[in-house]
Amino acid sequence: MRAVRALTDGFGFSANQPWLPNMPHVAAALATYFVFGGAACVTGLMLATLASFVVFLPMTALTLNGGRAIAADAVAPVLTAKARLVLLGLWTATAWTGAWLGAAAV
Image (cartoon, rainbow, N blue to C red; front, side, top):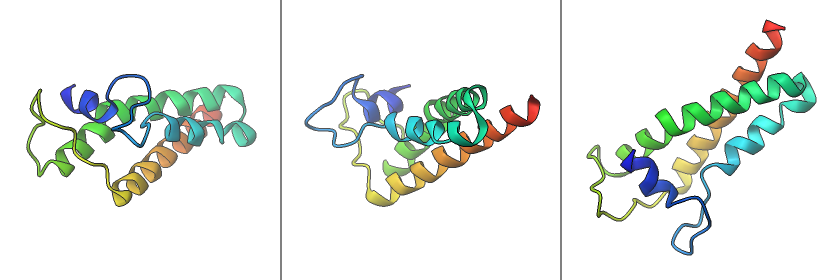
């Protein structure tokens, strides 16, 4: 949980944090609305949100910190451009897969 807190730095904008980790996966999930509809869009958003905060952000924090856990008083590692692109790809794939599964279940 410390990894998520270190990478998100609360719920608002911060001058020390040039990115907002929850917005790209929301945008990726909302894009599925036009293809699959509302219910599938919500399914994709829920899966992307869950995967983001349970798997993607903690694993990114570990990777950027050299595989070590982030100490409670440590500064959050800087999110590189390559890490941002990888996260965006993972969020998009998860959101579209979740929406596809949601649409297929109907």
